[in-house]
Image (cartoon, rainbow, N blue to C red; front, side, top):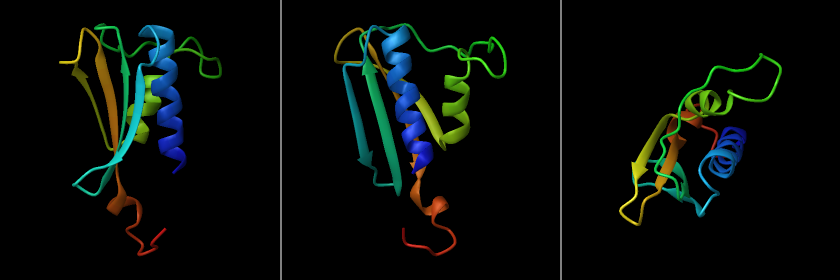
Length: 102
């Protein structure tokens, strides 16, 4: 659950800082036993991995964290307008492989 919270925070922050603001946030269970997080923003500019300023300083770590924390990550250029949706998926079965239901 902590990975999902981290990714939601990073995607919303990136939309606010680089994409003109988050238009909406969606979390949904998919048919493939996964949880999907989507954040839309009005900018058509694609996210780019930046070099961090320094290991312990803010800046340049967000997209790297998203790529490490999520099982799948992608970008959909929107049919709803000029913006994009950045999404991340987390497999629920892989997280519960020890048999623990929650």
